[in-house]
Image (cartoon, rainbow, N blue to C red; front, top):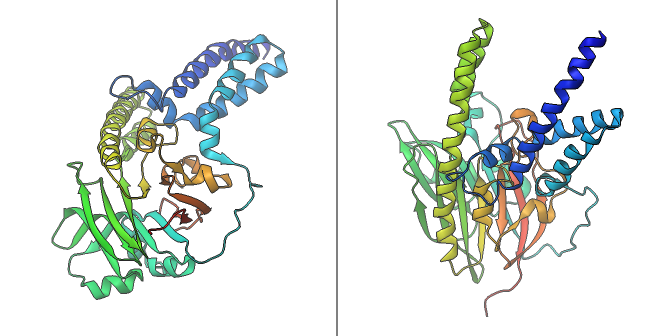
Length: 363
């Protein structure tokens, strides 16, 4: 037993070095294009696990009173961007405001409305009415091809919409959409040449002001097929098959990091040429410590969760709820008032709902 404990103790040293290396790489994830070096992007995606491992190592080396404790300590405090991107004080003071001219905007990956197929008695219209939503950005929209505009309006409770269906079949259309209580003046499509992912923008007339809303669904991680293969190999104890599948998963993650980075650059180019106040919504399929998220945000956009969120900010219900990959951000023309992300069982994502207000109005 003593020999086993000693062997475990020895293993903690290379584990500490490995977790420190991954943690340090994660520091650079927001600023290094994965096309040039993809390891930081991988660290950024798995940062929750890296932080938890380093917390364990911090306690382990603290108990043993060894200098190795310095490495997990430095790793943890160096990744302050991760903590501010995932945690905000639950005691943050609310901004007092008069309910009058605020805009309530929501972003929701609805997972293809699959709850309809499961006969769950819930609909988007109820979400809109209960939260007084003015603008709704939907990702993974699935809609029967034969529906008319009146039926659609009844389903969503908002009179104006624009859509970008990048996959169309005989029975259904798939893509993203923006619904609005206010008039939509114009809209544009951002084509990623993908059947699963795309972006769009809409210029919306809010009273006397025009604002531009971006709705984004960036490259999907989509490792489920390889994940199933891994479980199959695991069930028959095929170690070589498991190893090959893990390599395939890492390669797939690498490719998707690069694709998302390129998509982010496309979106940022349009943001840079926009003269209206800007709101950016969507499912980025990446974390706040990623190149895609930070390139889109640049120096001009404020993350709604960092600004007005409270507590733990996960938005994706998979992977034990460890990830925040859905965002609402806005430029300096807006003041954030309230951030909410209610836990709903209808999709693998939670909706994000924000109340914001234009700081200035048209003269």
